[in-house]
Length: 93
Image (cartoon, helix red, strand yellow):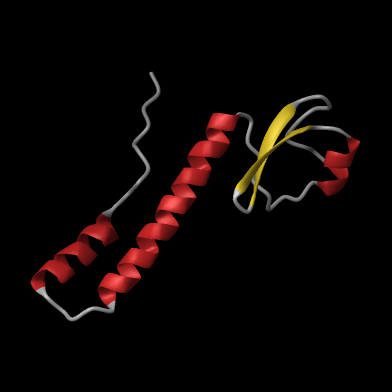
């Protein structure tokens, strides 16, 4: 099986509300799951964690808005949310 890291590499995972730093070893290989997200840097893990938390909050807020009495402002907010994209465009030179 091909693993994302070599022995001795530091990596990060997210477990609930905790970012876990680990060092890749034989135990990591035993615990390896393809559906777990592994991050090379703490910054990557932090950014992903913040993104998922913000997205979850926005979805809950929009569910609340959608449950309110219809109005032009409510409709506009729902349309804006549906067009919202939190990911930037990337350009490589």
